[in-house]
Image (tube, rainbow, N blue to C red):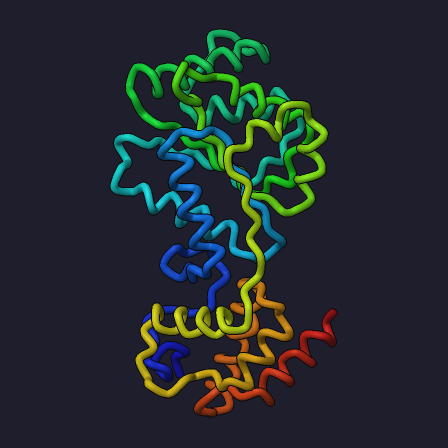
Length: 274
């Protein structure tokens, strides 16, 4: 019996993959997305978005890319998903590869020069906006942050040549405050907090609708949502995971709705593994 057919779903509603189509825009996420778009369009330089694990930073970054899809000719996006490099040289070499440039020689200075020439060509000669988005920014060690600070020095009289967006867990903050003149370069600082109980319900209902659920009857009872919120504390990834398990269970047990009793059972099972 198909998971989708039973509930008339077209897609998986509670996947934890960063699909922009299933990105629930809470008040905090909507604000972050809007402010990031403004910062990039105005070429403000460095934007920093912080949030705990599972608050939706990666999905936010993919949605940001999609926001600029109609302006692909004017905006050049690059992404680093995991900035865990072994050396400064490896980090710079990865950037040159990402930007599609090949330095004449292979020293650290050559790599920096190649990056600067690339940014000048794109931003000044071709009048494009180059955006580098780094996810998992908490993995950036101090030497790599120093490199990024240097790249932010590349600018014309009117604007920064590199638009840098860093998505990170909160642990990055004390590290960057130790770097002289780094925080001064942050044009946008934003912290994404977990959802509240109302937003938790809205997220669950939004994802079901996106997956094709059309039944007027709520699949999750109010008691179930309350217990989900209490357990997950509003973290989107945890909400998606427990909702997926709940839907699987009602299909296997031929129930019509997800009630509070089922959520209690799932929470108890999860805690056995903790």
